[in-house]
Image (cartoon, rainbow, N blue to C red; front, side, top):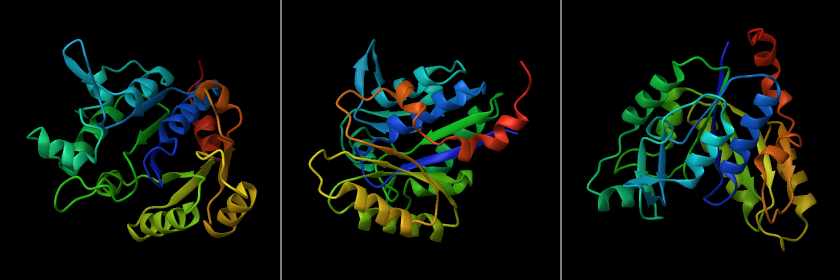
Length: 236
């Protein structure tokens, strides 16, 4: 039975891609077939006549299954701004149903584990009515929340968790990532979150100068998520 998670962050720049790629590497180390998707990305570069996003490329590199770039990242927007604003500048209309349909189509391919990475925080707008949360809701996936450990993150994390559950989804796990090397009382912050988030913390990442998803994989307690999948994985 394949497993899939929607990976969200408390904000932009909190390490969602790092954690998503590390989870994919951890699943690969358990002999599982993996797919990483980034259905929507802004802040893309133009390469060989097309827009390409570094986060999407990182997920491709961490996945075992070979996918075309457009399958991993169907909506690539150039400006590094909120997706709905970038789409408006590009003359495009973002729709949650379109992104959900794309993800489902790709997830119909054989795999054991899939990680769908969001963009920014939980309530990032897609258009005047929808947010990226509507994609996670449409997919009906449990959520992994990456918390960027810095001043103010407790409030951001608790509000994000509250919104996730209010939207009818489960918070499967969370990861602490110290994005601010100067933040004070980081262990106490993480302990406070652990007391309040009511979900397992599967990793606490210190500030990294050169993040390595493959190396980080072994430090995540991915077994909390992968135990059932590992039992159901086909023999090779």
